[in-house]
Length: 436
Image (tube, rainbow, N blue to C red):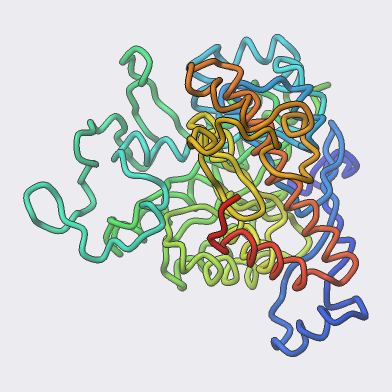
């Protein structure tokens, strides 16, 4: 079932690279050569017990076993190939034993395609300090705490309470729901994720922030390495023990913040372990995303898939694709949709703007999503103004389709040798500043 143990058959999970841009006879291929062959984009197929994922692909997030406000049937219709849920949230509610009894995550959420779960490692940081994963993708060099001193390893975000405490064995944390105390270790994370039953799981890791010192980054990286070994051992034990269950692939998670030597070390350490694939996570600044992903791609095994955690901005996705990322996930498309922000070829805009009051065109002409083929700007605007729940549903369907389609088109452009032309046109329009 996996590369983790040679006694398992391999047909239940696998990754096949199907094309690279440099292999095509096209103007784009010439640009790859002119660039020193640095373009690492590829297309491929990830095979899981619940179907295949054509890559590169965007994976919408259904944190609590549901994409907020959207039916699973609608996610399938808009082209989503896989969905990602959160192990921490599902552990707290409804509980992993409930999902196990239901037949696994997919059956529980009425989704028959591939599924992912993250490990809960993100919550170690977000609950621990209250800082955002990427620190707003902005600089932190001059950031100061409430008392005016530079932020350090023990700081929490202003107005936040430290709800998680890390030690070498695991993490104690307080539930954000009822204040109860829980403990995650690598073994518990594996047990929880096996019960949840996703096709792809992530090893338990410690996600640091950009405020952490170099010394703490090194300490956390070693802790994550040791946790990875424990995750593998527990995963192998559970895979053998849970006879008759579909095989669940295990991805290691690459940390190291913005330090090249730490990122490369993490890739070398985890890349030598028998993981099925790898997630690239961690704190970083937007301008360094491509460089960091490239470091990882240069070190990780070519034959295994790479997932970039928590990224959905168009320019960031293109940067990821060009540096060898195969799958992406992020909550942003639905999160901004619930606040009336919708995507268009010329950028994101707010549908509640007064100029759309009598505008009977779709969110944008040419969009093939359900929302754009059945509703207009004029009909969406009052739904948001009245705080109708349907508004979030319709905007979320559109936004998810926009990002899914963007990545699908990038995949086809790699195949037919027109990637650079597609990228330049798409990003040129999206960041043009033109009003929709």
